[in-house]
Amino acid sequence: MKTFYMIVWLLPVIFMLHDFEEVIMIKAWQQRNKSYIQARRNRPVPFQIQASTASFSVAVAIEFIILSVITILSYLLDNYVVWYGAFAGFTVHLVFHLYQWVRFKKYVPSVLTSVVFLPVCCYFLYKSAVYLGYGASTLVLSALIFTVVIAVNIAVLHKLMVRFDRWLDQYKLTIN
Image 1 (cartoon, one colour):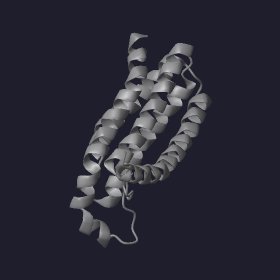
Image 2 (cartoon, rainbow, N blue to C red):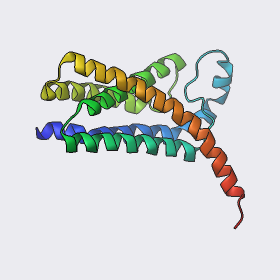
Image 3 (cartoon, one colour):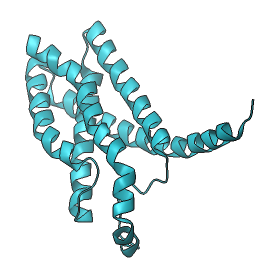
Image 4 (cartoon, rainbow, N blue to C red):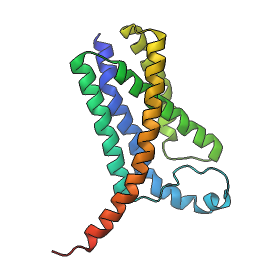
């Protein structure tokens, strides 16, 4: 039981460690690979967002708050279906980053932590499934729903980053 609760509380921690790699590396990576990115005209390029580090950090903070609230409520209510789905969705997110790396054929921010955390997350999902004793249909449905929720959340946050950058630009110009 103690091991399971440790796993529960590790979701926001693992998420933040993973996203720190993105926050720290994204701008330097974009600059370093500028000509390679431009040469890939009609092929997919990861991290094609034109957001500041500040707005990217706000998006990460919002995701961290969401995962933390899910973790806290799951623990307090002793119901882990939503938490399991969020953890599974995050794990799928790691797989997506590995896919980006393979397609891009170079380092992309987030791949190091994805390589490290993917086996750990898979193991944690397995151990959690055994401990919780939920049926396969519950686990799969929870994972599918939260994978979609996370994808939609990321898309919305990307749009909000642009708005937040505009707000920051206005804030800089405001004189007291």
